[in-house]
Image (tube, rainbow, N blue to C red):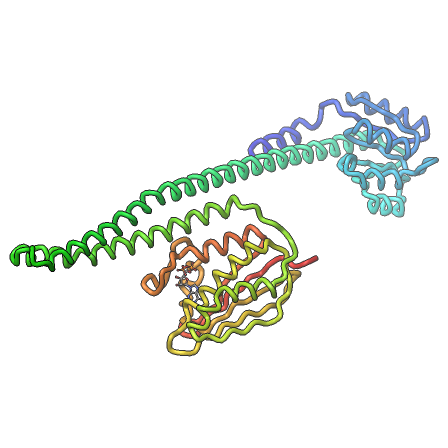
Amino acid sequence: MKKIIETREHLINENVGEKANILIVDDESKNVKLLKTLCESLGHDIKVAVNGKEAVEIALSSQPDLILMDVMMPVMDGFEATEKLKDNELTCKIPVIMVTALDSRKDRLKGISKGADDFLTKPIDLEEVSLRIKNNLNIKKYHDLLNDYNKILEDKVAERTEELSKKTRDLEQVLYAGSHDLKAPLVNAHGYSGELGISVNEIVSYLQSDEVPDSIRKKVASMAESIPGSIRFVQENILKMDLLLNGLMNISRLGRAEIREEEVDMNSLISDVIDTYGFRIREAGARMDVSDLLPCIGDPSQLSLVFANLIGNAINYLDSERRGEIKISGYQKDNRSGYCVEDNGIGIMPEHQEKIFEIFYRLEPHRLSGEGLGLTITRNILERMHGKIWVESEAGKGSRFFVSMPYIK
Ligand code: ADP
């Protein structure tokens, strides 16, 4: 930004002074000669075209800094040539000064509508020509400078985005490797603590035998009493850690998984997901109601994960005080397919409604064996498929989880 301001001041203070390439377009040699002499005296390089068609060709091949364009010319007039230049992205930024007849309001208006940047009137006033050339070259330089800066900024943003995605990939790799490596010791701990439990049971049954003196039996029995409970506690915690590690591995896998984009039949996808929950729905005595759903664009296996999480939660967080009702409905809005998973469960207080999407955030840590990762994974998956998720809920009444996905074009 500092450089832009400095350059702007430089342009204003110094005016142009530098050599520019100017294209003079006129079929009258008298006018060409006059403008050429003036431009050369200002230190610029000159090219000449004798009609609009030639002007467009020269502009495309040599990219002048400025064009002085006469209006009335054979083959192609100045209006048409200006329009062509402004319509082409290679030449649209070159300032075109139109040379019109004095007081020809109609020509000026037409010139503006074709994209002319400035006007000069005939008969030509040399001082005016020189000032207008300088001004338009300044503006062009200013534009070029802004373009350069835009380009630099775009490159920087692209570079940073690449750096960030590389770091994210590295982090996902570390997360995966870490979780994966922790699993082996955990499996050992689970195995050995199980064996410890078996050995303790054997010791306890051995203690019942007559061979063991009473005094020892009493002493060891009181020590052995608490051991099975402790081992159970260790094993429960190992299982919890295992669930957590699985969740973390899933999160790290997500970032690396290829996402397919295809038309997904949501009616059959949801019906498959509900089938997998058949037992739990019956066990909970819940009523399930599914409306007709619109298709969407996404990855079917990832969408199955999303709805398995949402339907699983809807069952998990039903209220034992009333019969559970779970509804799945669809809607269409702003070219997107929407789905809603609604339950009449325990609901969520407003202050937790955004936080439940954060990693490890749980409101009911003692209620069930979840890890607080389901909704984090769900939101991540949806974002990768250009989808969105949000919740509306009332504590004590129930929740509605909305999913919005790109619709079939
Ligand atoms: P988990 O269910 O494994 O704990 P989630 O990320 O799926 O993890 O959910 C985070 C928390 O959001 C849950 O612990 C629960 O407190 C709350 N929650 C999610 N879905 C519902 C729901 N349908 N009704 C009430 N609370 C919910």
